[in-house]
Image 1 (tube, one colour):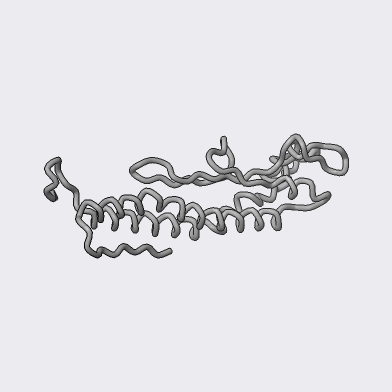
Image 2 (cartoon, one colour):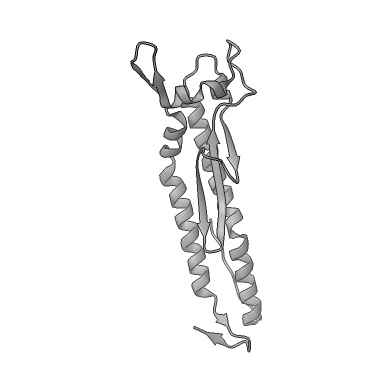
Length: 167
């Protein structure tokens, strides 16, 4: 991702406006990058999900802007949150071959459960593992974006009400 500003025969106020415009629209470009990584996370989660009937894997979805307790991440700047995404599996609309909704067994598959004989069946944390696999890539995108935003802020001279530059 690259941004550039050139100044030819324009004043300081116009340049400041241009830089503010870039800064304000910058999160959209970052969100596009993050969305591409989340698609990879979703694909990996589907690959990692145990498949007896395939219903649980087919219920894996991404959710932007929120995520009520699901596996996910969010990114914030001084201005507030600019990105939030979650991945989840299991719902009441997707059924396995025995007619059971995936919401009824997703936690047992993902986190594990006790068997009737008292032994613990270890789950397959396909959602967590997929997010963990791309955690560094997600962090790098956000860190790079925040560093670029900080660079913009340092290069934009602030002005007082009279239009004179201040520190």
